Length: 256
Picture 1 (cartoon, helix red, strand yellow):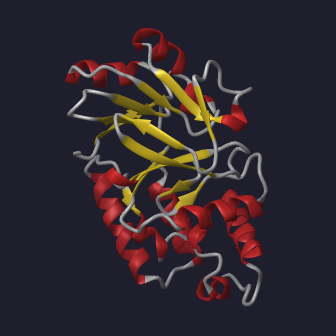
Picture 2 (cartoon, rainbow, N blue to C red):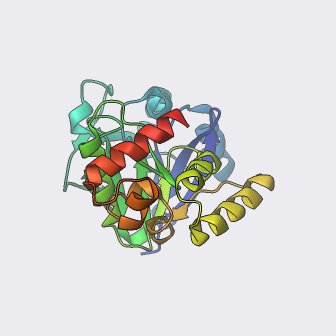
Picture 3 (cartoon, rainbow, N blue to C red):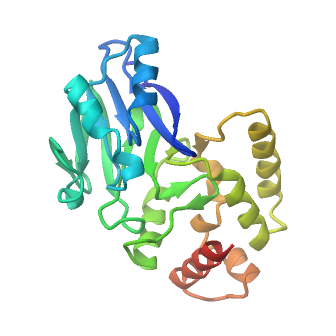
């Protein structure tokens, strides 16, 4: 079976919506449709028919297109069981360790609370595709709105355990702002400096910086590195518990 063809669809001001298309069956899933119109335009341009809608969490900028797309295509709506009261008309609800099957492509579901309490991520191993919503970003992570810092750090650890070849398809184009912050607390990180230059060039050409690859996040994303003694030392927290380090980094980013 060939891997998904994955199409990035820009939406709203800085959202990314993803179409995952199986060329053999014609099955097409959309991940986190913030609005319907750009998704419909992308589908129509390619002659694709939408069959599945996958939601990572309840925020409107990830679910705003659900109703219109489901009505037009009769697509199956799949989302987090912990947010059943906050996402309308889900056909299938899933949680930690469940499997989602899209035309034979099987995703493992990870519960990744923090940004929202019921947030989930979908890992399609056969396509090296991690759809992580607003939990993990290139060089960043989501704001902790509903969960605790400990929950969000544990979610980072969970995603960090995905194979390093995973392509990270996140919900927003926040990379340059994340890079500026990362450099402010980790200025001597040569790999981070190089990635920042690369991302600046990409954005200068009008290109998305997503997907990133997980292996590149491991030594440059400060939110992945709260248990790294070098990062703890860089922010004056040598020997501190990783949860405390993570909370400090997230607090600094919130004020940056």
